[in-house]
Image 1 (spheres, rainbow, N blue to C red):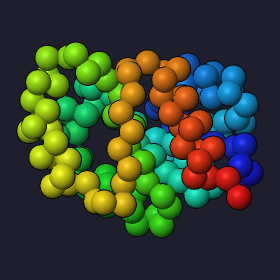
Image 2: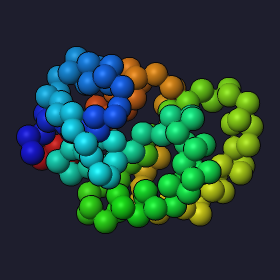
Image 3: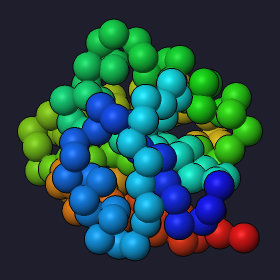
Image 4: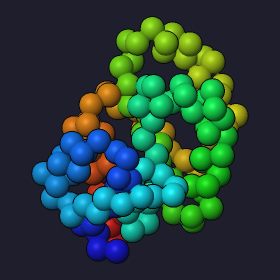
Length: 132
């Protein structure tokens, strides 16, 4: 995979593709069985507030990290949300959940909840981790 190509799950908002294209990437939108974005050596999952909390309830948070690790790629979770959200007041509980389910091989990247910030986080990860 060329270092300027990134695969984005086709269920992600179209604006994410626009933002990544603006940052200079050729984006392939396709169904990804594991993760929401993928580079040559990295794989990542984007958890926006609603999806993050829903993944706790439906227990995806337990098996998604393991599936990512099995790819053999460097794993990242982007936690996208407003840090002032009152649900974040449960941060001690959320931190504990993350400690229990996330493997040390997964790097957490917190960002504000907008697609430009998410795209920039992906760009930064690729620039630091996915180049030859």
